[in-house]
Length: 289
Image (tube, rainbow, N blue to C red; front, side, top):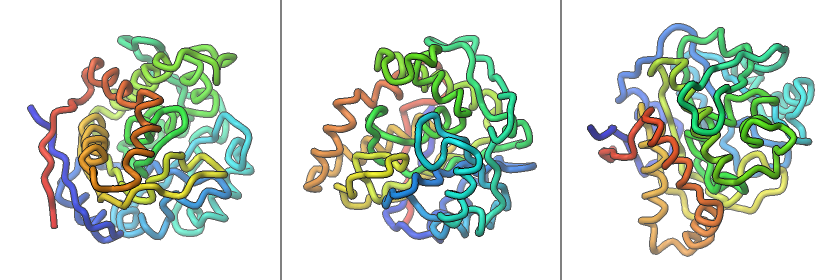
């Protein structure tokens, strides 16, 4: 059965909310709203103003986790200052899930590369999840989409190193690359299982640089903006985004972004996630004016 992915070429805060409302979403109880807070110096991340109508409508708490590398988000104190400077904590309630330990451990019995996922213990306080993702390139993953947000995005600082190192934090930057991508799929599966389907995915194809929002020094966007996608399936929404990039043959920046995605074998994360069975890459793209 094909997953439904709703798509609009109009990129506005109001359109994000309108697409979300079409879903008649399963979100209930206390909603965690995962965003990318943006590394200090990054010019491409999507700002709080863009997400405000949807966040206000849902009424949840913006959640983030500390990073596993040097920067302005690798400690709770620095991360909270970044959240303030970037307007998140002045616009919404915010929580850093791994502000204090110990981490919550999600088992991954069918994981191909890792059998545990370490997430901030604050995740236990939420009943459902709204994943707000800025789709773009990524220096290691090839691309950053819903699957990366589910895995690296939700993982604690330790958990990020654990995924990158394929279970060995000493190999955070030196592990086998495809095994790292498969570990991301394993970790994503554990979060999907934890929330038992109570997750909505929003991918926005805007400001598409080859670099991630985690880069303090990032290239400017290379492709024209494409649109907003919303789905209940994390694999389908990422596959749809990749297909839209491949379809943009007249965009002069397409080759540059595809070189980043393909050089890092980005589609392998989708392959690995599909093999785990927590979604499908078969989808129906429903375009909304």
